[in-house]
Length: 193
Image (cartoon, rainbow, N blue to C red; front, side, top):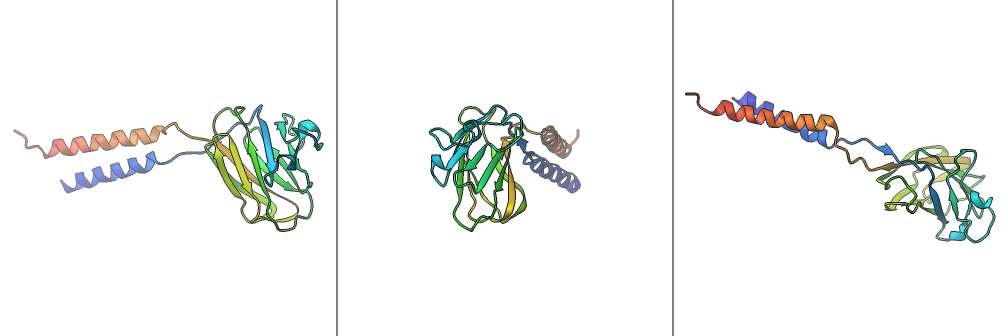
């Protein structure tokens, strides 16, 4: 009898653990239009659609479908910013960067295929430290680069993910197995006539 109760508890624990498991799903940026700011200023970002010229509206650009260059340069030319269709964001140092307060914000408006569910650091190449990554709302992200130490031409990459709202089939199966085990244990406790 105790063995059956222990079995039920193990199945229920496995079910609860499986239900909490979720996998990140990259957010497609195909056809995205991005409005950016640098250190709180719209004129601090220069977009590819404006050929990086300092002019009104140059902080807005479309995702480069050819993936041949960056979508933005900062107006001080310290950083280049590139987005991929698969939701990766890469920030490049264009040379020597002195330590300081550097921040960026990117707003995709209603041009995304879905909402931003997660924004995670992926790795660096010639940069150390971890940037501050935050989701402002369902279509806007922010970066704080103050904790990043840059080598010349270093970079870091982060990934935008869509929310994973679909339960995994294994979780549902484990939950049903737990219910079946409980029913079996309850039935076996009843005296037989």
